[in-house]
Structures are given as C-alpha cells and as structure tokens.
Image (cartoon, rainbow, N blue to C red; front, top):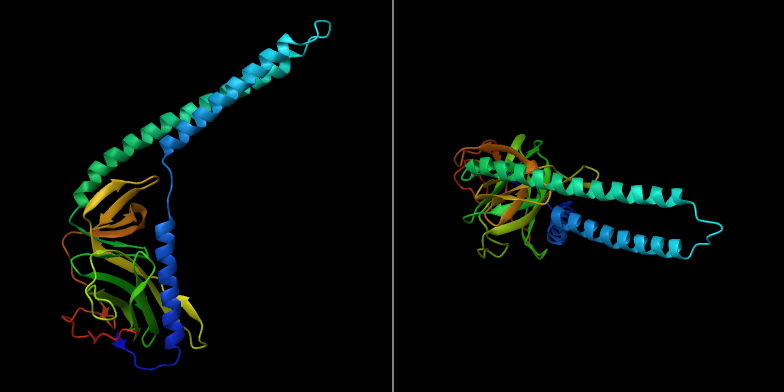
Length: 269
C-alpha cells in the first residue's frame, strides 16, 4: 500500500472516515446494560407487589359481595393460577441465570489460558498497547482508503489517506496523533473508508489485532481485554500464540518501518 498525494475526493473521504470513527466512539461510550440478576430481582419484587394488591382487592370484593348474588369464583381462580404461573416462570429464569453464571465461570477459567496470545477481532475498538496498534483489511490495487482514529471523547487524533495494494493491507499505528504527540495506551475507535469512482464513500470491512491481557464476564458474553480495551469474545476471529508476524502490504501512513513496503506517514490535519 502506498501513500497517495492526489487531492480529488480526499477531503470527502477523510471526513467520512472521521465521522464514522466519532460515531463508533460515541456508541461505545453510550453502551450500557443491566445484569440478569438485578432484572430478575426487579421482576420478582414487582410481581410480589402486584400479587399482594390482587389479594387485597380479592378479599375486599369477597367481604362486600351481595350474599343473595355471590360473585363467580372462576375468574378469581383463573387469575390466581396465572399469577402462580408467572411467579414460577420468573423463578425458573432466576435459576437459569444462576446456571448460566456458573457455566460462564467455568468458561472464564478455560479462557484465561488465552492471556498473552495475539487475537484478531471484528470490532471498531482499536487497542493501543505499548504504543502500538494494528488493523488489516482487504483492498484492491489502486483503491483509495482513509483511516481515522478517535479517542473515547470522540475527538479525531489520527487520520491518513492512502492507496491500497492488492490483497491484505496492514496498517500499524505508533500511538502518535496528527501533531506527533505520543498518546497514552488505551481503547480508541477506528474507521476505514473507501471511495468509488463516482465519489461515493463507504465503509471497508477490517479487523484489529492486539494482545489478550485478561478475560472477564460480560452481561451476555465473555469479554476479552486487550489492555484497557474490552472486546466481546464473539467478535474474536482468530487467536495465535506469541506476537506473530504480519503478512501482506503495509498500509500507507503506517509507523512500521521494518517492511520494505512501508511508506512515510501522510496524516491529514
């Protein structure tokens, strides 16, 4: 992959990449969910309150009914059966959540063996570890691409525009922003965009690579930690031992000067 110097649709392309990176950062910071246990507890508490209210109403109705024309008890019996059924279902869900938690604990114990290995993931979260982060995508020869990186606040800290080579393209970032300042390790958001001959921009699928430093339980999935970056286990596509060796073309703007194909950084300001 080589650095591109043509202006053309470069501005439009880099703006699209920056917008996508900011959106990924905002989405990541806004994502939150509650645990299964608290949800089940809330459901049981609500059911208990409703059940008590129902019994109070039932008792009041029975006390004040017309003795000469007693109320039909079929309705009360049916409602009592429904309440009992709902209570049993909530209790079953609680027990199921406990079983899932136990299963996840066993899985976590097994997954801890992955710590120290290099993993590839389909995610917009770019883990910067030891002042290094990398991603890969498949491009076509001569294809213009833009890569933008945003911090957790949604501020663009790095962007490059380049021309892809045929096959797999690799881009390595040394953690420096567009002004050459070294940024701290952490979780950043990244986007890769391309532009068609007609000037239409679109996202280009990519994967990020990082070293697994920990495993933790999430609300619905096991989570992999790469430094301070957290990525769902379901997003991991490959795990290899050691740091591995990248193959394919080196992306323009890459800070990896070891490759013969590496080009000088062409950050867009």
